[in-house]
Image (cartoon, rainbow, N blue to C red):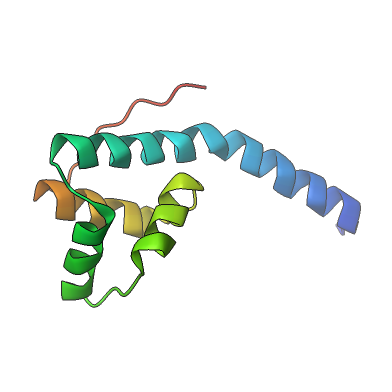
Length: 93
């Protein structure tokens, strides 16, 4: 079954809308941890570089603020900030 481009766009828009609460929750979680652990974007970038992940501070800030973190980057940042690989987040829909 083939779908039209218009249908594919609608599906994509609906998917993004459905995922947004989870993306916002990850952003809020990272920002909360940064405050709690007194970590800056520059500090995270330095530790990411030690793991062979190269991002500028502004690029990381844009990813976090723009709800554009991949799952892998999210968990890596959580681990870097907390020295723990667990993330417990609450999603408000």
